[in-house]
Length: 119
Image 1: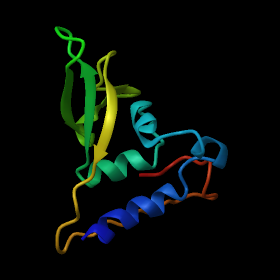
Image 2: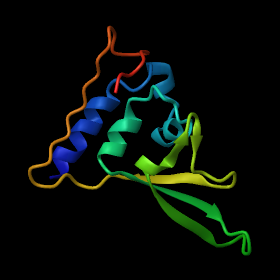
Image 3: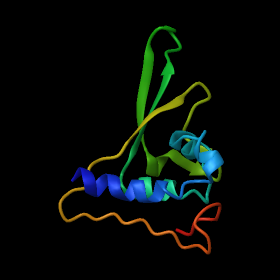
Image 4: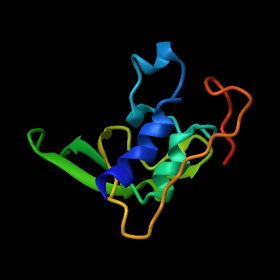
């Protein structure tokens, strides 16, 4: 089921931002900006993806503290996310698609790049 999970992400990332931005950007940064027009945010939420956020422990600067946040709960309101000032996104975990589950991204726009996503 790896292929059924990875293909929709790959298909959407083909149209992720413009070439200049895509060459220096990362998916975690795109999620943290909480753009309401992002293509990946709704897709990762519907796939039940989780963010692993990390920070140095406040008591011990050598200990890393991590917490998991479902993408669907990460966005609190317009341009606001559940991320403390000292935290960063360490990784994005996307669970494998189960039997008889299907994920297919659709992008409805007049042009494929640099447009506003319709969800």
